Image 1 (cartoon, rainbow, N blue to C red):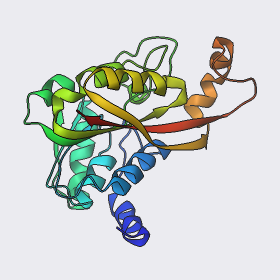
Image 2: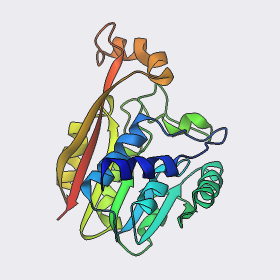
Image 3: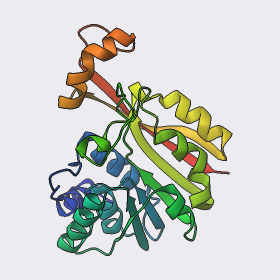
Length: 228
């Protein structure tokens, strides 16, 4: 796919995020870029976990996936993603649920995930917008079960692509994937300025010793896991 063709896909995949639903940002865009560059999606059966507004799922459909199934634990996000798929004109099966529900389906060829990964002082509760990013003190409330259960959802030779922040332990993700049926590697990284959520948590992260004083940038990382 040429740059112009992918720019067209990006434009078509733009979505509306309802109040309380995560609006696609740099992490979503990076994951979509990697999915396109990987050339894994055309003709594949694709699973998008933590779909939010459905931007990643819609992109997979526009890239030529044979089938796209998307899950989110938020009823509001599911309704938003369903409406966005209809608006874009793509066939995406959006469902309410998480890893257990996805694992009950036939195995997928590609698993895409932009999970909540921002470290938070308290464990995430409720169904507000904060659930789209809050992920516990180490940022791994969703990442850890994704690493341990991802292989259940993939066919032999299937591929997992997950985006997260340097502050949520990409090295731990790599190690866990390697331990749970994958060969893990870094697919892409991108440095971005802090958004409002990370800016609000900067002093706390500095106090924890994981952020240098005065620094207000983070590295987003996409890791690839090839199922063995």
